Image (cartoon, rainbow, N blue to C red):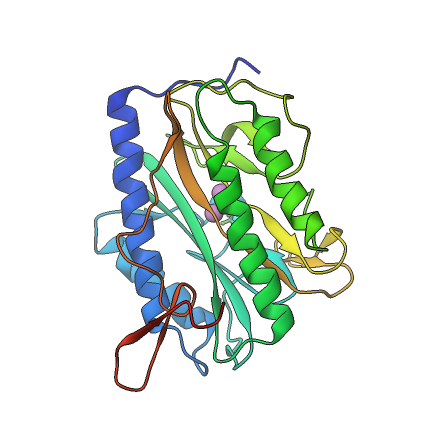
Length: 273
Ligand code: MF3
Ligand code: CO
Ligand code: CO
């Protein structure tokens, strides 16, 4: 448990810079999304947008992952591999961007609506968004990792959804995945005691049905066993004395997730909620 590093101010600054790049790329993904493009188009955009900053897309070749971003549609829980799959009206898609800049990692994801979502798609997406928010609200020096998991689990299960057990949030810094593991379920008052300077992700995956997942023959794509919809949001945070700083915080809302385009080009805030 004590192998969780406390980052220096300089290290946090490096992670913040990478995190802000990832956040900016994710904002731009929101602006390019529309029915008819493929997940390979998203991959190409994320790859080019990352390289143009002098940064590197962490997923590419990570333990053999073949692309520069994860794109997870509908019943795909996480680690979806970009392909020729066309995104269609009614789909929900999580896009998970991880940027490496000057040796530091920043990791963030969001679920987007393609066209008009079904009531079920809206439900699972909005519940997972709220789960991340509730998890972040628990973070401060002296709190326990179990407080984060409990807050997420209580809300998701209270809404009749389930929290995926097989994948967790993680410490992050000069490596993609470091200790601690951040479970999105648990008991208040249990687990690692948080200290200022710890940096980790919170990235709850919420399923409409059971939490069981299976990994497809491609060795990456994780899907719900029951075929139910799954949604996820992710931020990278640093613990402070009084709370936390969301290092992947966005300077404006996400199109097709937090705001929606209207005919005159203006944005309608939270139209799908
Ligand atoms: N970005 C994912 C996470 O949130 C990890 C993706 S690993 C990959 O931890 F190899 F699939 F890219
Ligand atoms: Co992550
Ligand atoms: Co991620």
